[in-house]
Image (cartoon, rainbow, N blue to C red):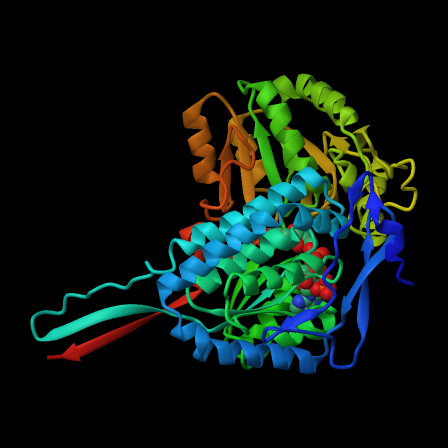
Amino acid sequence: MMDRAVHREIAGVAIPDLPGQMVIGGREVDAADGDRIETVDPATGRVFADVPSATLADVDAAVEEARKALRGPWRATLPAERGRILNRVAQLIRRDAERLAVIETLDSGKPLAESRGDVSTAAGYFEYYAGIADKLQGDGIPLGTDYMSFTLHEPVGVTAHIIPWNFPLVTTARGVAPALAAGNTAVVKPASQTPLTALALAGLLAEAGLPAGVYNAVTGRGGVIGDALCGHPGVDHVTFTGSVPTGINVMKVAADRVTSVTLELGGKSPVVVLADADLDAAVEGTLKAIYMNAGQVCSAGSRLVIDRKVHAAMLERLVARARQLSVGHGLGDPKLGPLVSDSHRRTVAAYVDGARARGIAVATGGGPVEVAGFEGGYFYAPTILDAVDARDPVVQEEIFGPVLAVQVVDSAEEAVDVANGTPFGLCAGIYTRDISRAMRFARDVDAGQVFINQYFAGGIQTPFGGTKLSGFGREKGLAALAAYYQVKCITARI
Ligand code: NAP
């Protein structure tokens, strides 16, 4: 049963009004059959809101509205005006930053400081891509004096965006901002566990002057409406961020209609620390790499690949720092919030319990945490598993929790092999004072992003995406735009 009253204030933070309807064609609507799904505060385990559970008819309606807007008002909007609208969106996100951050923390569990950072980044995506809206120009092609030949960068059409629960608003902005800048329209399906900020964003987009139907948000079960959206004849591109199995399914469904896809899937990214590294920077970088959002980050540095010569010193410092990290309700702004759900916490715990049973040393953490006042929350301790074999499941599989697997190596060359020794290839970090070694690592590692001496270095401007099971296509930066326009070549004999 819904119990909004319990959550009027938490940790001294007032709970704002919450969005509760989908947005289709500029109208706030319920599901066609009136069905709803509940969303839980992961720090209390209690339902605090509900949203419509869309039907297939709702998906059809959203895609139809997106198509109408594509051919109608959005096409008629000058590119420079598109840019102005997106800039206003950024301003409105910043105006409502605190409300959005509180909603994001309630929905996902992440610490308030992280949600504030996410909101700021979401605004940044709209600003960044606003600037490109009137600069997506083609080329003139020299065929000689008897021809005029040139290319246009046209929108691909209706874009579907399937969003995971770990970065709900940021992932929505990351896909929608470049899509709209390039003249496309969008249908967004947020994760069922975190649907609220995608709905809240709709109000801000409308206030900024975005024509009705350009951004539509449908909430509901991925297994019911996700397939329908990816295989919909009215959808021209799918941007999916989520797990590998779902991504494979999305690709198969989209293939039936030869719809293009961008897949941002999981990772098992290494943080390599060589013997000459600045250990202070490496310790702090590794902590952030694995414990941000309680490790529920696709690009998390979830493996520490460390030179044996500094293994003991680094581990001692890491363990001491990990034990200092506060765990609590996200609105109290601890270092770690809860995991997103009870079932996800059980999955994380099963990985760690399995490792322990196989004789792997648990250097710190290794179990759930009770937080006073929030006994129903899904908290898990910052955990470090030491000296893990390369074939072990905690090295090979994405745990998606606050669990660092340490792998010990004897040389920079071995570090590259170990770094590349999983089916994933999303990110890789290295700490060393030897720039040539760092660059050789960057050259040889299988990853879409490489961070040297600062894990997570970069931002909105730096292209992001994976190799191998981590997916394909790039988001962020100018590279993201390639998914959102098609090149038309026009050639005339004159
Ligand atoms: P997930 O289960 O794959 O869900 C992702 C999204 O797909 C949700 O909106 C989900 O909806 C939807 N979905 C479920 N079944 C679907 C189907 N048959 N067709 C289409 N959509 C469907 O992943 P998750 O558990 O939310 O997220 C965790 C995973 O995402 C991790 O593996 C992580 O590495 C990855 N991730 C990657 C990135 C990246 O940028 N590379 C970023 C964040 C997360 P429901 O919620 O309604 O089920």
